Image 1: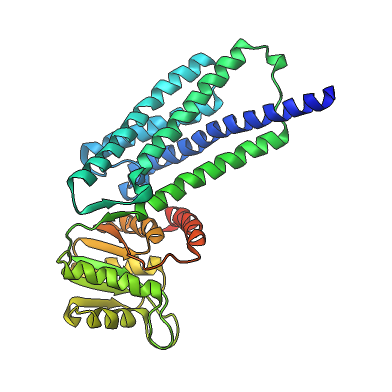
Image 2: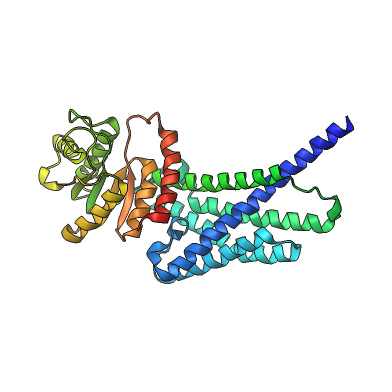
Length: 352
């Protein structure tokens, strides 16, 4: 009986250790990302992913963001390995400005949504990624302070030695929390309608059937672009996509739907070589160089918009996002969101 109680207490201690340590590991992962992106920003500002979390992509704001990211990244890496309470306190002070910056950045989003009728936040978008980032930065610091204080106040020999399973669990939890941060970003971007006035609405394609009939998702995307045109928020629409089935391309189907809905054919451009998201964004850049698309509103399913925005940022395209108004939520929506997290990371590493 006593042995069973001892094993149970050891298991609980290992589980608690894994949970707390996972927060420090997650902080180290984020620290590595922030440090790397800050260094890449020195080479080429378009390489930085920091615009995802903190606003200010030019001028003094960009320089301040670079410095903050570099200091915060190094501070989080240091907190992962901090062994003394004094060191943990110093590093907690180092990362605290990033927590404040993130809260201020989130407040700017709320203020903008309150002041501007064109900025619409829905659901998870009311919790900006920057406010989640503030928590993600603060928690590793708090855990490091507590763990170093406790280890200094107790007999080291009496402290439970974490098992291999506990260590594996802590790394798994850290990876899951980082994935959760990216999932929140994907969802928050998708739930935000930046439908301000622009020059061109770019509607991304989806499946069109062999008969020339649009899928429900494609129809909803097109009708969102049509509404933007009819309400005077854009002057023209670019339909981009490839071939799904048969000889009729997605953009041709999209154009027919838009014309039937009352948009003049002269106000519609088509790109039939957008066989995937990357190709569509590259084609947008090429068309912009020749036809001057101007400021763009990107229209697609909400889970798709963060990856498009990242690709546009890399090619220095001026765009904001508008989620398509769907008549029904797709049954595979959870799968789409998880896939977009993987796709977002893939684009972050490879899209140039």
